[in-house]
Structure formats: C-alpha cells, structure tokens
Length: 62
Image 1 (tube, rainbow, N blue to C red):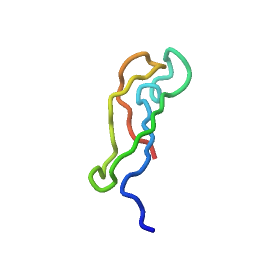
Image 2 (tube, one colour):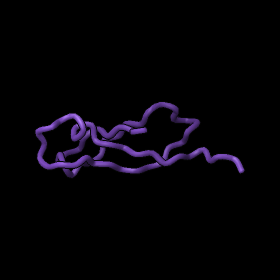
Image 3 (cartoon, rainbow, N blue to C red):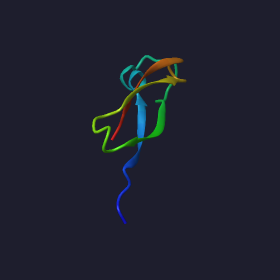
Image 4 (cartoon, rainbow, N blue to C red):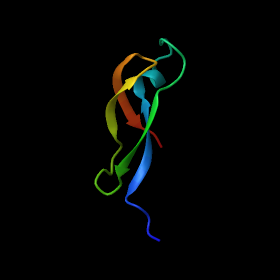
C-alpha cells in the first residue's frame, strides 16, 4: 500500500511557548492536515489561543 499524500500535523501557539509571563499555564495546540506534495515547508496559521485570549500565529511542530 502506498503512503497517503495528506498528513496530520500539530500547530502550536508561538506566544505561549516564548512568553513566561502569560495569563495562564499551558500551550494552545491544534491538529490539522496538510498536503505533503504542495506544502513542503512549515505551516503557519493565525488561530485563537484560549491561554493568550487573542488570535496569534500558530506554527507547525515536529
């Protein structure tokens, strides 16, 4: 069987990861899918972070 083109990735909030003085503990994470052939680089999306209480940039993690 061949591998699928679409893979599941995890998006993590960049503000929560880098700021120690934040509103609450924890890091916001989302899961989504991407096409491995069309999107070869790391994905970055603006998503809502409940810990920061704002829309922030979420980057793809390994």
